[in-house]
Length: 422
RNA sequence: GCGUCAUUGGUGAAGUGGUUAACACGCCAGAUUGUGGCUCUGGUAUGCAUCGGUUCGAUUCCGAUAUGGCGCCCCA
Image (cartoon, rainbow, N blue to C red):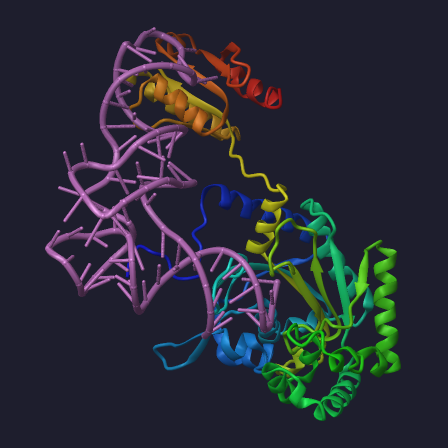
């Protein structure tokens, strides 16, 4: 075993990939500001119970995918497998529910003990948006529109929202009982997984990919037939508001989501991406009106979504939609060792004036320094020799046109700023 | 967790049961001067994921382990 090898299913982030992560993060931050959502962060690990009770201990995530450990104080801890339950815990502990509404976004690593694949890691980053404290279908539409907006801003085509409702508690229980009744007599026709689901979470049988073609699944009762009036009206309003935001969606009664806390609206977003394998769902979310109270807080309805960064970057790379070139404004070169100090001073002067710049710190000749300038993709090269140091008039070379200019020291900043996009 | 395929330098890779592991890119040095990118010359893996086994001899064959890809389950 090689200690230099990173743990299974984890990633080192550097160079181009790092720039891609920051590019997405910056965009999210901007959009979060526009929608007035506040930055949120929770600890990387929580007491295991937070996720067991929050996410639901019949879900696969908690049943077989959590990263659990016992700390030195003998406490059961779990590395955060998803954001929502952790944020909810924090909302309750800090009594943020007194604020009425809390609109928050996060960007945090998540951990799931799984067999890795591309777009599926043991440590992956997810960002998400959560809106607490409103029962209005407006906010469901807002949350969905944020997700759609982000994907469209990134340039993805064919962004498609698949939406469904699970109804309120009453509707959901009615439906659940009806499903149990329905499947009871057909139990032996189902796959082994579904037999297990029958006891724990019969809704998930509907979503089974293995049994999807069986007539019993196709003819199974539909949630839409078991919604009470308030649930039906709620769903209609969500759709109405999506229409008024011009968001394209498709109602898909099969979406039930793998997390137990959802009520009413659930949705998944896909996009058209070349050669994308089984990980084409890049965003998932929904409403979870009972989660805050089930973790010991007050009645505090909420809705939110999560998106996986690595999967998103995969998609953008396949569609060639993500910039990753590096660039600086100026690279300072010196002809001989004598001018090194002068170069360092000029460099500092540039940086104090918000010019993105650098110089060579090892003892390379001019040729080597030019190479460094190219490596850093510098727009300009400033050359300092004996003459420049004496006269304070510097040679500035545009690295794409190769034109050279003689510029007085006090005019350098203006020159670089004005000619930045030349 | 199941199935399946893979793993050769910084990167892309060729290749073989037996002397120095091809080629290309990249990188470094020099020709090269106060101006590079072109060209030329030279240098760049005591090493073929790891550990065992078979063998006179293994990077090549076999096994285990590790990691990665794809499919399934599930999910972001």
